[in-house]
Amino acid sequence: MAKQFRVTLKRSLIGCTQDQRDTVRCIGLTKIRSEAVVKDTPAMRGQIMKVQHLLDVKPE
Image (cartoon, rainbow, N blue to C red; front, side, top):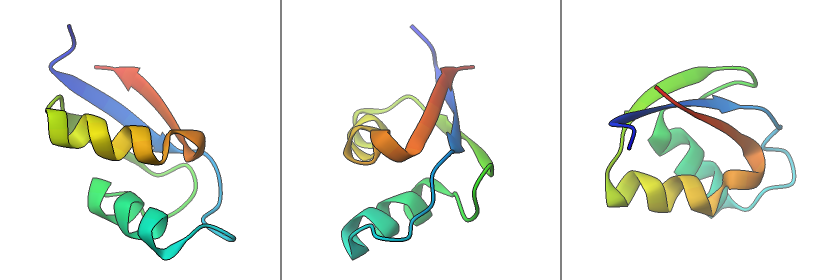
């Protein structure tokens, strides 16, 4: 199992709910094609699942 994920924002936040925007910002992503390396924790997995349609996730 991966201990970290490389998360990339692949879609725009235009038209998303404020809750989804806040989740993406909390992950550490700001613009399209921005990347963040996040730890594999249940909380981060929940955040990633919430906005999975906007992200590209790869194991690190």
